[in-house]
Structure formats: C-alpha cells, structure tokens
Amino acid sequence: MVECILAKIQPNHPPPTILSIDPPIHEFSNGLILMHEFITKEEEEEMIREYHIATASRDGRVLKRGAVHYGPHFDYTTFAVSKSASTPPPEYLTRLLSRLPARDDRDIPDQYTLQHYPPGTGIPPHVDTHSAFEETIYSLSFGASTRMDFKLCGEKESRRLRLPKRSLGGGSETPPPPPSPPVETIEEKAEEWELELPARSLLLMRGPSRYGYTHGIKGRKHDQAGPRLVARQDRYSLTMRKIKPAERIGCDCEFSHVCS
Ligand SMILES: O=C(O)CCC(=O)C(=O)O
Ligand SMILES: [Fe+2]
Image (cartoon, rainbow, N blue to C red; front, side, top):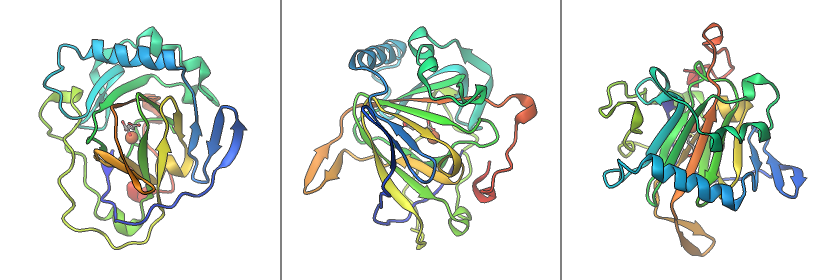
C-alpha cells in the first residue's frame, strides 16, 4: 500500500450510471460501484456488537482507528498478508459472501478487516497493494456514513509517494498512526472527488478506481453539508479482499507509477 499526499482541490463528483433504483446501485466512470442498503439494520447492529466483543480486551487504549482481522491478517508493515497470523472468519461475515456481486472466484474474498473510526479519525490516502490482492476490493460501511476521497494519482504526484512504513511498532494488529501533515502541497490539477458512503452501503473498487486512484478519509470531527456542519458519528467498515495465490503474485497494470 502506498500513500499519496493530496492537493487541496475542490471535489468534483461525476454523475454515476444508475444500475438499479431500489435499493440504488450506482456505477462511476472510474470503476467504483456503490450499492446502497447492502445489509439490514439488524445486521448492522450485530456487526457493531461483534466488533466490540472482539476488541473488548483492548478497549480503553484504542483511541484512534481500531482494526480486527479475519482470514490471514493484514500486515501493516508490508501492506500484504501475514504469513503466520490467521483467524477463521465468523459466520456473520461469511454469510455476506453469497450476496456479493462476484464475477468469478477471484471476486470472493478471503481476507477481512473490520475497522472502527471514532469521530476525528480517518485513513491516509493510499492504493491497496496491487501485487498481493485480486482486483475487487470491497468496503462495507456501517454505524454511520462518511466521505471518502478519491484521486487519480498522476505521475508527477507519484514521485512524492510515501513508502510503506516497514518498521511500525505494535505488530500487524494496529493500524499505522495518521501521517504527519504534508510538508508541502502539490500544485497539480488532478481528478479528485469526495463520495458519500452511506451506512449499510457496499463500495466496490475495480478497474482504474482500484489501481490508479488513491482512496482515503480525512480525519475530521465535522463535515460540511451545504451551510451546515454535521458532526461525524462512529463509523465502522469491513474491507474484504481476495488474496492472490502464489502463482499470481505481482501486477502488470497500466498505473505502473502507483503499482506496488
Ligand atoms: O474504511 C474504509 O472504508 C476503507 C478502508 C481501507 O481503505 C483499507 O482498509 O484499505
Ligand atoms: Fe484501502
């Protein structure tokens, strides 16, 4: 996973193609697909409950974004999967699999990361590792909505990419700390927009949105909604990825400057 410093550019939001109306399914020109109401309110409540049960022993010291991993654990030092740590996924997660709009086996995830974003926390802009995971990355939002930023990472900007922090303390269970403020902003006109991810929606990143765009969430306590400031609430997400088998490790995408 590589991080990208974002320029301060007004978000734009190209209109999606509407694939379905009730519940809405929207497809964007860069390959993003947003499926509203993917889980029920009951499932949402169960997932929040289960997240807190799984982290009960750590609560109190997790002030920032917290994470729980199922399947082979995500390793924040390599941004691929751990070779040793693995936890079988619980049934409340695996039962979602049959509902995913999978095109083939490569779209059926086997690595799950549950994350909790208290108000004020976010995730730095990054591109999920191309070589370690298959194309489709799923992000299920629950608890509250948030705004995710997408930016086509140009060649000029990519020269300033930050490399993975390979020596973080705390092992693979703890997400890395938020990045220090950018030393300088990059004057580069690039395609960038903010997408509202409603609670209970499923986002799919495929094609350019998966390989050539960074995605991230600003760590804010409030969001501007027209003239109003809206306080953020606790948001949770489930990221689902399919690990590439050994013979498919690597990537030959067209976005070589952000390919890792
Ligand atoms: O919280 C989310 O929806 C996204 C998380 C993410 O991008 C990641 O874990 O790589
Ligand atoms: Fe990601």
